[in-house]
Amino acid sequence: MQRLIPRLLRWIRYSLWRNRWRTLRRVWLQGQGMQIGPGSLLGNLSVSWPHSVRLGRACIVEDNVELHYNGPHTPEIRINIGDNVYISSGVQFNIEEQICVGRDVMIGSGTRLIDHNHGFSRRDLPIRAQPSSSAPITIGDDVWLGANVLILKGVQVGCGSIVGAGSVVLRSIPPGQIWAGNPARFLKPRPTPPSL
Image (cartoon, rainbow, N blue to C red; front, side, top):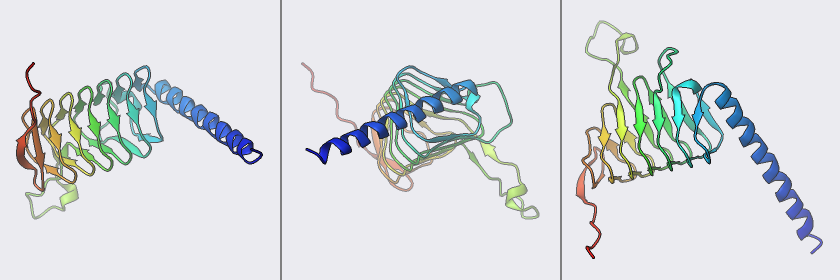
């Protein structure tokens, strides 16, 4: 019992300290213009332009998430995340246009969403000096993206779809399907619930 009480006190002190930092981070980001819905929990994340991010209600964003917008300062919302979204650690949103994530989405750790690509058509210019091409990414409601998924420019993932871990998604996925692989391809439809 004598060992338990100091451990319990350390745990309470640590929990209070961690919650205080979360509250300060939330207030700081909201002061910078980020829209954060009630009940959302934020880990230690990196945001390049907080005013261009909207986070819905009851979302959970774990540590080491990057919300990175490559463009100039604009008043528009560029990263729009719906209600009840879970974003695991190490996820990166790297955008030039826009990314919209629907409601009730789960995004596994290490997932990358990149809405642009470097130009490489001219041999007389270095690749980094060529103009990039970009297209918005849309993730529908009730989607599950497994760990280390890569979603590239212009992709739309339909409502109720699942993308397997380690997949590279180059083209849009229709609603209610399971895709996996590199490049990602159709595996099977999601099972429908039995009728009553």
